[in-house]
Image (cartoon, rainbow over all chains, first blue to last red; front, top):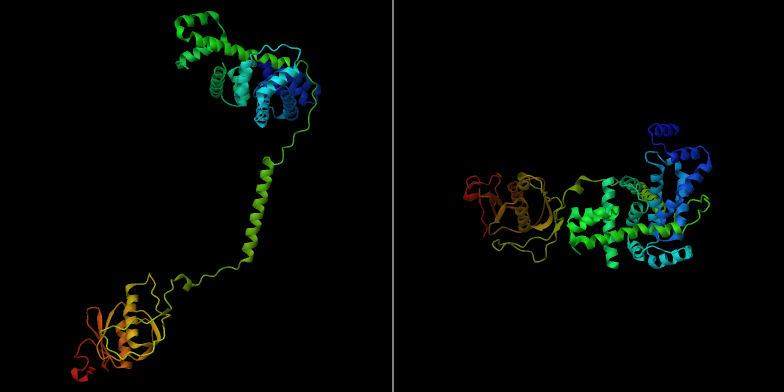
Length: 186
Length: 256
């Protein structure tokens, strides 16, 4: 465990997250709170993008961090902690979205945004929101990781558990599906 | 929608995502027909990126993390299927075991493996050329339990089968013998038709007829063409192939 941190440090890519992970696994619960605070918004954005609902996203974030809290020992340190965390977040969000896929998303989306942030102006394009709502959860996850989190193709591949070329192909197809629906909305 | 060449399509996405205005202008000059499509993509990418805004806005404060209890899968989930499958397998195994112990072992007899022939048959009709004293009463059914001819027996066995018949007219017995031994048996006019019983084990037709001839006063004559002529006469020597062997015409009693 510690040797992994030392190896990373020697290789010049010191990973602060890895130190926090090791501290948490050593019994320091405050280290996990630091990880939680650092990545809450990113995980929330992913869940929000996939689920298209703020309340469900907030609930999913708690689920994701609970999973990480209980199973952090399974993190094999071959990838960065953030990539591993995003993978858990994507899988959990897609799973939750499939469970509730038959709900009428478009109406709930508008209501949820209005209810959650009544005093903030919504500057987003409603056409984009309605188009996203029509996509499959897996496609939404890809677009969120690429356009919202601006992850590299390698990180996206790690986050969805496939190779770089497969991630590129899936992303291209998701974008094409989005474009077709977006133009149909025009 | 216009079909765009793959390389141009890829280039347009790159331009839309990178937002380099100079490169976008140059592309528009080179491909004026695709300018509108490119602008559309730029707007779409901007819209996609801008959609992140509300997601961040809706969660201004980070709630305190409290680990939750792990969610138990609802009834009917994968574990239920696994348990159900195991229960079914156990029931099937138990049923098989019980049935195996309760059912007595089946013994296979040798005779069960051979196909069964007819055990009872009605005597065939008497031939028209055979002038006999046909009994007025209907003859009893003929039982031929040992005339089974199996499919894998040799040709020789066909010619030397077993024959057992009780209380049947002689002519009917000859017909049955002819059928079983695959030998043409011709009864000469004047042959009597008493009710007889026979029991022969693996004998040829000529041997059966010789034995019968001694008992019922007729002589079998092998015609050497696959047929046997049965004449109402007695050949005490038992030989029957030629007239000389029968002792001449004087010893033959041709009925009439």
